[in-house]
Image (cartoon, rainbow, N blue to C red; front, side, top):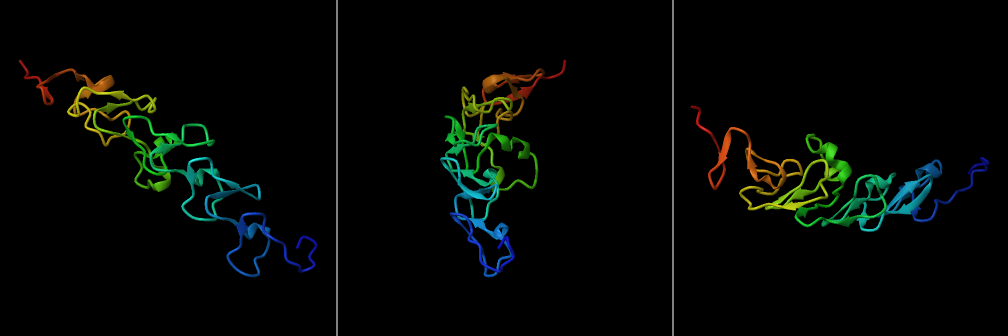
Length: 174
């Protein structure tokens, strides 16, 4: 009670408390698929949901499997690009977590399927490779090529290597 009269104050719409005698309105939690924004529970963007109630930021709204959140937006999840696998929680903003050991389901990133390539700088632009020997899949954009293959669609061996028909082999020194 803001006036100190000892009366109860209700939580805002779509929110609740976890117990009796909660000290004030800040104890109110939003329900499933909602997040708290300046004391008001808001729906997650279209195509996303939370893993549990009580979330306090739109970043807790995770895109469903087969969709991803584009960089610099929290408006709606988009369909996964052709040639990519988008696990639940995929977001272009999660690229920063790719090499960290503490990656959680909140930090998923799209992976390339076999025969597809994308650069790290533009992961949404996906190109088809010549074969799964060149682009084996289950890799992140920017790391799509088989060993010692380079360039868009993994079509060329690194300097000092040649293509055997199955892999890049190091040239013999003369």
